[in-house]
Image 1: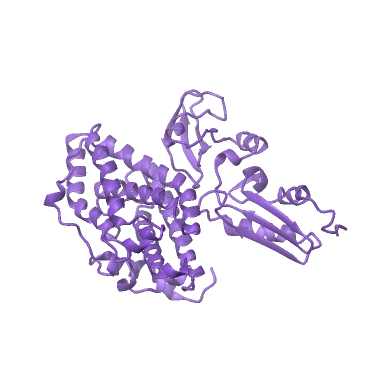
Image 2: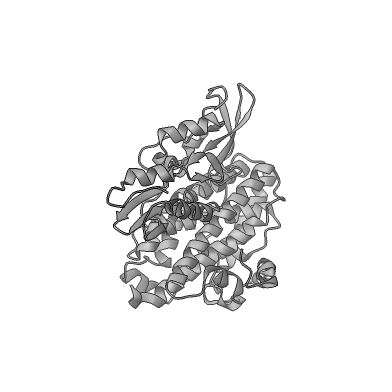
Length: 167
Length: 254
């Protein structure tokens, strides 16, 4: 049992605990590195966490919500609240550098960063996560999960996926 | 916002029912599309649309209506407020692709207009959904070009036939609502006439630049009725199929 009162509990403590929660569709990535935790509020008797979905129809969201709730039970508070809201919309730019590296290490090209409004045309250029070549070809902007696009690398002749930019 | 409750509910039902029925039609390509990438594309778009429908039904549930599953699976045909465009069967791939372009460009503009809605949950959802719909429009317009200006005589002819058949139904998306003025003056939504105006400004050049002839507005009678519960003969069978599993055990926990 963690001996702690909320008086000494910090946002970083909560985020460290949430870093143990992973997206079931992307187990190499914590929800903190994914950037879907949009707020943590600590009150004397409660912790309130807001998460925002990557895609509105993301089927993993209910599981993530439940995992967050269970994780927060480790803290000595009366109430934990997990809110799903859209007030801070998720974009792939919210993903941390550590998260992007974790994707690349697992053969999933990280999403290209973009400024302002993104245009789907930036999808056309992707770097192969296996050989680093940019001589690649977009096969489909839709893949095995809502967040992925499918490519073919003309140099190492491998199919690969990219986490597609959204914003 | 509760003072505009009926107007807001009418808008939410129209949008949610469009997304649900269109999503269901797209899901019919799962396993059957001409190539694997298209199979995945239509299935992904279907999943996005069902997500949008769920978010909109949830807003209605928060306003005191039944839970989303109950709204989606237990209402009868006359209670649905979708336009007839989304009900049409999907046997022909040209029809599916042309409807995809006509409908999703309208969706894109509708959500853009809603980003500044006075009803905050809708404005927040609109800002979230825009990124997803960009991919839907990107997919639709790529195929318009591939089978139009970059296509063959046969592909162009089949897509043109689909456009001629669908255009009156597409105009039915913008069937006037008796709540249009109230929605507009309350700052919730600028109204269907404004949406149609902006849609024409966008869709006509997209179609023409992709090698198609756009039917003349004067020669076309819009297909109305869906927004007040009058549907084509295709919605009933669709609902029977869509709700079959739910009806086996309506109280099941999923």
